[in-house]
Amino acid sequence: MLFCPKDFSYIGVMGTWTLFDFGKREHGVKEASAQAEAADLAVQLTKAKVAQGVKSSYLELERSRKLSQLARRMVSATQVIEASYKSDDTEVESARAKMESRYVSGRARISSGIRQAEGSHGCEIGEFAANVRV
Image 1 (cartoon, one colour):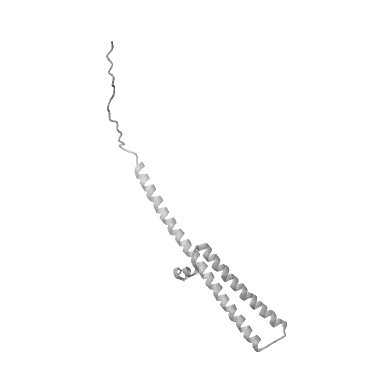
Image 2 (tube, one colour):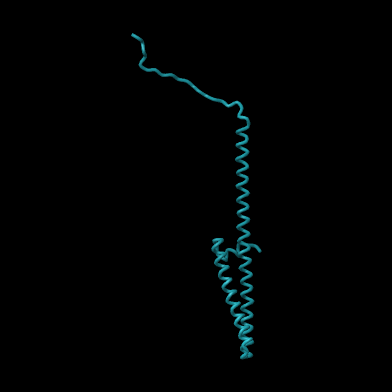
């Protein structure tokens, strides 16, 4: 008869220690640092592009407003002249029609500029005036 124990177990400890990794860990830290810096620069670039887009939309809107005001004054002036001087001249009527169409066109450009600015930047025109310095 052979002698065999019923419970057989062993206890041991196993471990590893890297003495030298040839700079792998240091290069990994430098790479992560460079990636974080690149991400920060990308955020700054995006913010600058958005600010430039908002500013150019606002300036275009203001330009359209001024053109509309000018057209309104021109139409108003022609109405004053028309009230004081009635002419059957077709040339005068043609000029008046052109001014009125420019006025309507200017109003349409302002409306489309407002919609475009609000749609592309996601804020109201009042926010443009408060947040954009010209």
